[in-house]
Length: 176
Image 1 (spheres, one colour):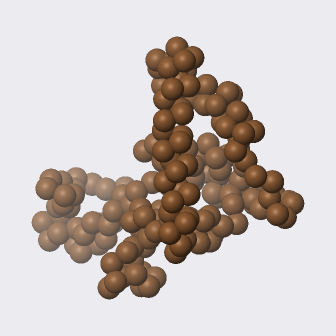
Image 2 (image 1 turned 90 degrees about the vertical axis):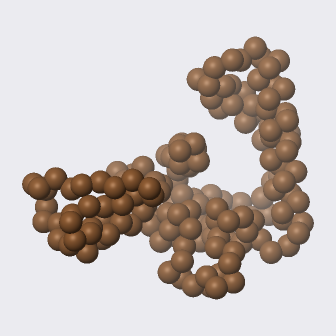
């Protein structure tokens, strides 16, 4: 998952932010009225950030915030593609190196704004978070063990082996 890969690079380099300001895209927040304020109905992103890492998510409710996000993404998509082409880059490895060493520093130098308050608002990752970052940022699905010791994942059925490293009972919930 590209998103998780980027977050791993960010978290390992900077630590974890105290909060993240986001739009209300479905990736970040359940938007259905029936589950909007239900703390048990979290997106995978909310679960990873808020529950597992303790990062506060602030959802933008103004149309201006949505516009800023859209303009930024359009600028990045348009400008980055042109910069990669001008630099003669054709592989993902070269593109990643170019982004880290050239594009992001150049982009930040041009568009970054000096913060109103000085100071680093990142906390270092705990040992547990460092050791389990890939698991924290992974998609988790809960499955129920059926009476015949099968588990269904979307349209596929899996038969559990007779011998397991731990005891598995009927109706147990498995999290992958």
